[in-house]
Image 1: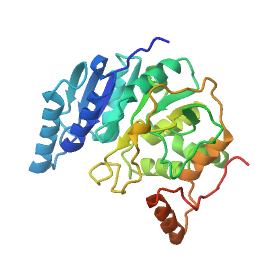
Image 2: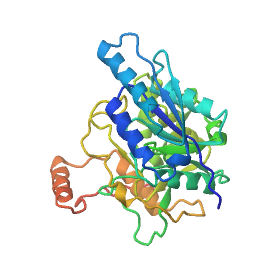
Image 3: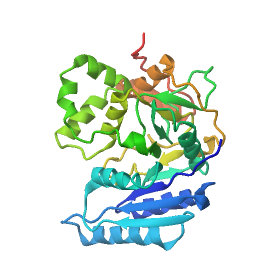
Image 4: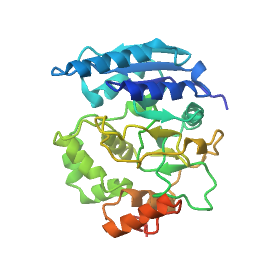
Length: 323
């Protein structure tokens, strides 16, 4: 199989320390010297302080100061257009020139084999119309486990995970970025139930989007994936680690160590599933991570003690969408 290298798109704004770490990790990737990097940096808000202006300028200096990949191009916005519009407009522009893209944000640190995995999956699944995106991240091991007899190093998901991900031009062109579908969806309980197989939080996030409480883009991507009867490919072990849990990001509040992964486990030559099918055991386990049912505080405390001691969670919610 001949691997075609997709460009890497990095979206940044005003976090110089995060951006520096992301670029340093990217440069350590096995295919970085042969890859093309496109950086989009958002502009200042009208009420930006002098400190914020300095942070934005520092980010722009960082991305230009070294040759982080084989070739690099920069797009610096004059004014702030927000996370959602930056990504939608940026990727739409990229897909006017390229057939596929690998997308990072300024808090996503990658394993050295990240580009290898993403490019291999983009090539392998290019003609699989049922595959809408490739994710570089998986779910935390203390919350999610693949079946012991599952032999592949990636699995099928009803939901996209966007902490380092990739997609193709033809999939991107299918996305409806308007919010006109939400009322129709909410008026159909059966459709809401089917969409929520990816997690009980999906409908509330769409409502946040509609009512202006969110400037995110990914919830609409996941909905359009559902609408196209499509899935995402998720790795067994994560190729990315999110370093934005310090409260500095727009959509990533301070949340401790929830999203941290051991990138040394990333598999350089993964065994990919050739048949796209829903394994009910995996779908149930994935849904269990995002189900609305909450554990009592005392169970959460015992689970945390188990993790500190290196053991698995003792209490696991076993809510299923497949009987």
